[in-house]
Structure formats: structure tokens, C-alpha cells
Image 1 (spheres, rainbow, N blue to C red):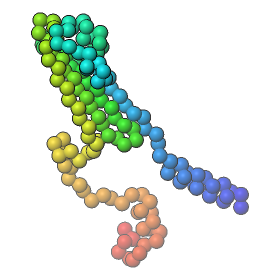
Image 2 (spheres, one colour; image 1 turned 90 degrees about the horizontal axis):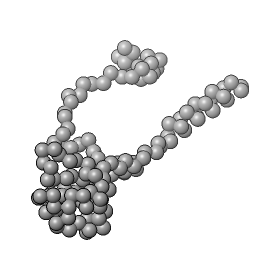
Image 3 (cartoon, rainbow, N blue to C red; image 1 turned 30 degrees about the vertical axis):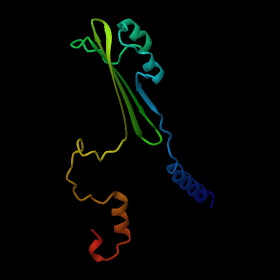
Length: 145
């Protein structure tokens, strides 16, 4: 009797543990640039002043030394939504001339038509438990394979 109770409690415990939702952390990447920092940017600022105010750029292209890119990405662990921010500053003769800013917010889904690949689906072979169930308790004579 005790052995059956232990088995039953073990099975129930495992089933309940399977229902527990795991915690997913928020993921932040890149440079955090606040609106207050952007307001402090003024045309004519030197590169050193911009670097002091915003920090080192995430992308400093050696082929385009007059352009710095600051990117920020936040992915919510709970909703799986991705928010992205982009700030690009342009310089001319080591002085700030132009600022471009962009924001994006989109849910993270695998149904994106541009990057999705359609894989042909093949009929799935029944799993081990389903095959065992069918062998032990066939519905009719044709399913006993």
C-alpha cells in the first residue's frame, strides 16, 4: 500500500512540476540613450563632448569615421516583445552636424514573411506512448500495427 502511495505522489508531483511556468529575464543590449541626453546635443559639439555625453558608440565604422551609431534593444521576458532604438550622429570636421533617431517596437514572432522559411511537413510518426497504447488497447483490428 505504501509503495503505491509513493508512486502515485511521485507521478502527481511530476505532473504539477510540468505545469510550472519558468521565469524569463528581460534582455537589454546596447547603449541606453535617454531623451535628456539627446536634448543636450547641440550642433557644433566636438566628438569628445558627444562621447562624454552619450558614451562610446556601439558602432564606430572605420570607413565612415564621421558617423557614430548608438543602438539599444530591449526584449521583455514576459511578453517576448522587442523594442529597439537607434541614434546616429554625424560629424563634419570633428563637429556634430546632424542627428538621426529611430524607434521600433514589434512582437517577436516566427511568422515574419520576409525571413520565414517554409519547410515541407511530413506526416509525423506516432510517438512511443501512442504506439504502445494502440498495441495494448486497439480500437479495431486495423490499428494493431
